[in-house]
Length: 342
Image (cartoon, rainbow, N blue to C red; front, top):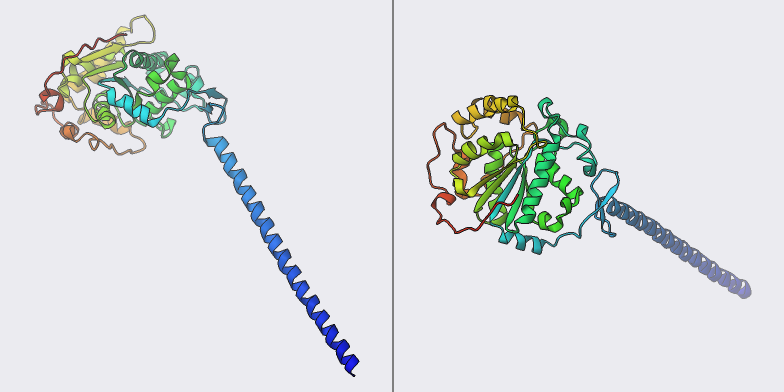
């Protein structure tokens, strides 16, 4: 009996050990499976992260795509924010390139060739080369003047073009073309103004944008646009905001060296000049209607939050001149050796 008991007791011990080993083995296997699953999940996470980085972040070889799935283009070394802000701190002069259309294509490198990708009105069909000349001229002017801030101005004006602004269209076109050989000289001193809906807002909003970036108002303003719009800018818009004529410059650039047909100037007089003469701020009648149509995505204008000293210029609406003091009408004139170099 004792042998049997002893044997039974021994068997029970062996069975207990076997059961414990089985439990340990099961637990270890469970831990191994959990670890394997964790590693798989982590590996998938790394793969997704790497794919995202390759698709959306700048490539480490110094190249970046200006397209949605199209060929890439070599870029300059990315600018350092501190250096850019230092450059902004030195600027005194404002150069405005007034936008006229949005680019709806995928590849900004081909923006100078894909006329069908620009959202153009019928009367603009032959004007695309002029838009690109405006862009290039603005970059060249900024490159020649190290104290200039280049502002591309124009909002999301075309429903067919989607929520892409005229200003963004111009900026990325310049970037895709490596700033026409001027590199950081122009790139580090260029910003966008993305809410203007007409030429008056191109001017006023860009002045506010200059203040947002630099903390002061410009000493001089240079506008780049069509030659036939010179009267509108220099005599009407400039006068409306009371900007000194001696500190205002205009660079008219057309499609080519041939003069614009007479009907273009007639249309300018009929569709713009006569209305701005009666409504200098473009806030009434046909000009107000035109602005509403050029805001298909119902964007809310952020100004004058960034430039409170000229808030009344944004709220004033009337046919009589605005006659209150402004920063550039009360400031002591600063001696300037500025010379426009075209």
